Image (cartoon, rainbow, N blue to C red; front, side, top):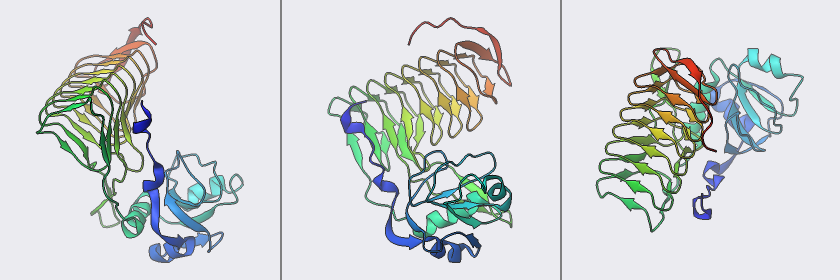
Length: 285
């Protein structure tokens, strides 16, 4: 990917100064640690900077220090002796309260759309939010890129609360996206389509998906949010992936498969649910 496509993470910075105490008061929750802990930006548990606001839910690992962490008592006691320098806000539903904090404190800036002069974008395509498009990219009619992901969390009354989608989309060099495909922007970080990848018609690429280099995605495929696909893989038509699934390098997923578990490198898998059929020799990469 060229230098022009390098993503500046300053979009995660808050527009005003707040502290852990400010967020604790807003959420009306218990605070353990420094009330004056600065919060400069939002982060996810997978990638945390100093002075961030981050949520920690079941199964996540947090190794960073000097941040404000929204979590529940169960997870707090698990990590108590591992990361003592953080400040903690204890709530019942960390993801829900993080979404509420995002809505309260995050201010959207002006969208940034950067398109290399060699890219060919059909006039009917729709680009929203922050979108970075590399060299020799071809975008066919009625493609949408950067639309807000369909992310919601139920509150205690069973009603839906929107999880703001503040990430962007990076489309690397020589990618082609066919008619009617939708690529959602990331929640906090970016959705990425790797160099040379080809995506067929009427696909849905969920938020925070990361597709590697030279991947083929067949028509009407639906990738759940945060799906990861390794380099040189082939995804057949009408494949569906569960959110968060990781598919390895040089993998072939058969037509109309439903992928509910991670798939390792160099295998053929298909079915509902998808199962590994046999190993596949590594041909590229």
